[in-house]
Length: 423
Image (cartoon, rainbow, N blue to C red; front, side):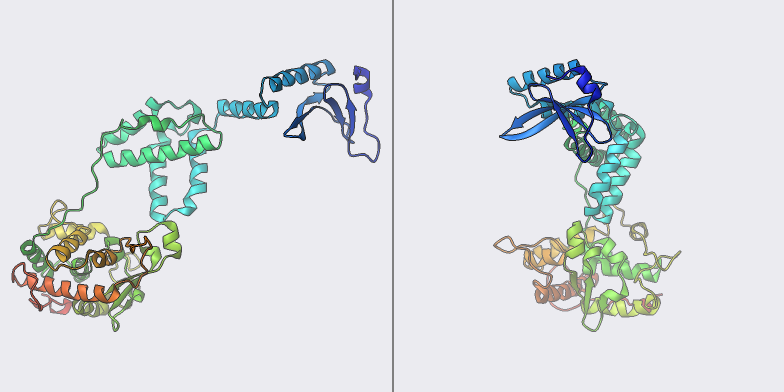
């Protein structure tokens, strides 16, 4: 058994890394060469020796160290691991002191965002900075109540942004889940809000699918007088039916007009981070009508990078609003026909009128298409069938524009209005 005098006078002999003075019941005082003295209690778990720190001498006296040892023994006798219990206590204390929601949210974003697409990064950061941080950012994350988070989301709903409110809730759930996983919060209070928000409707891109009305729209596009570049984009949008962003930001380097092929790099496609970084490009066979439009367009913008540069800067493509406004000018508001809706127009008529294989259609839409074994097809799947389909589709649009009716019939109809022929 140690005495207080022994503890007071204990030193570490020269040349030793440490000196141990043993008391009883596994308690010992460890002295370092620098003179610091610390109490430890020796314990065993699964046959392996461990130790539990009980504090520094003389701040923790011999008597206090013995009491701490006895308390740890009692916990162990009751089936608790005293070392693990102390770690949990420390975590609880850290949580009670608490990091702010903003600190945890930015930590979460910093770790997760490198795995996301650029678009997803922007959207998640906007959810945080616009709709969460101004209201709960300075609050300790462990103190935030479900009702408080709900009030924050109600502010988003008050703007009429019901879809956004659901996305912001999803972001909040992810932040709280991260906080729980890293010991910075006790529970994910965002999960309590399931069903609390106004149900949101799935996003709908208006699309005309009546063949006669499609013909009227194509005729209107061909005589659009708002600008040659915009008209070219409007002509190609229904003909090639790619996503608006993929069309608007198209670059001349992606096109081989002699081979009648448009190659969209994976990084520009709507894909996961891994898909963008390591996926194959998407191939778009070009019908003869598209090649003709592109050759004419090349005289206007071929000396630059972009097919459809904006008016203010040749390095920035025309915007979604530009194409939306053009359709509006032609009498087609967003409740009737959207640029994105041309994809639905094509999908419907290619399936129901021209009777193409749905798998070929989905492949050209750049949707995930898998074989019977669940394996994703590669970028060249159905390429010959897709080329034939796009040519027949362009011919069909010509026929509808000529007012030849809804049938699938063969052969092109109205002459394509090329850029240089426009008034």
